[in-house]
Length: 343
Image 1: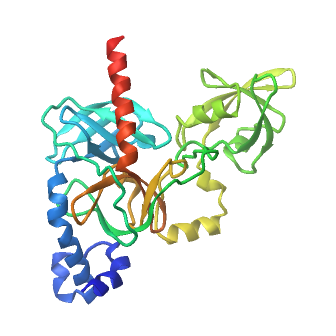
Image 2: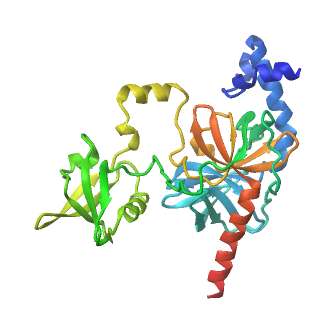
Image 3: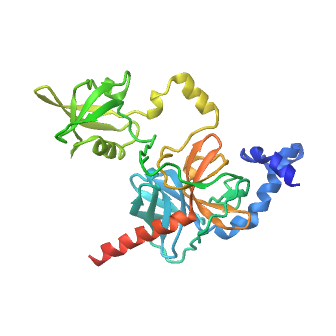
């Protein structure tokens, strides 16, 4: 039986056939149903501990309840505008952002409700390669089922801190800092990029974005991270003796990928998460997860909560922040709230 389950592991990751098609089910379809059924009692205790996060009326992510009095962890880079939490019973409540841990991309939001059921994370590392796992959603069935591909590990070394969110607005320039810290000089402008269309030029110095001053590349990157593809920003530049303000409609980083390569990537498994770099520690598993289903818990067959799914990083590569990493992050975010309340 175990060999049969392993043989159908990759097939599990696609949608299950409908009940109407039961008579025409293949052995692989039946195998998928059996494996999903194995997780039914495992995920049942967490059915009311997972919520759907809406940002400006659109489904953004899942959320994992971490306290009885309304605190929820979710994928922070997907939160924009008005945030609403939809509970498992369908009730929708407004939510407020209370903190963000940028390295892990975990954000803490809160709703006004006091009878919630929080999850408890496994503290040690039980994630052996090949162990069966399930992604918990807001329904009675797992969102996806798969196996652990790689044990918990650091994703990057201590000196590799670059974080990219491919959903953020893309300008399309190569920049360098000025010695006096008074702006960012454009070294080159990518052809057909938003910057090129807005008539930005090599040698221009960017000194502001909307109402904000720009001192260096990191500062400009932080400002751009607040915007998404299609939004229009005012870029303030110095060109020779002139000071100009140019309107730029931000693009997508994927636009910089050659069309043939982009089509190939899309055909190989669908959309990836916008923020999928820079995490301090991850568990890697082989589920095919829709990016909007990140933010919910990952469990094993024994019902242990291994962590929170944080990014779909590849065709069959999803990353989870382990519970032992989440615990101190959550404590840090909650302590910051208490400190603010005492002021």
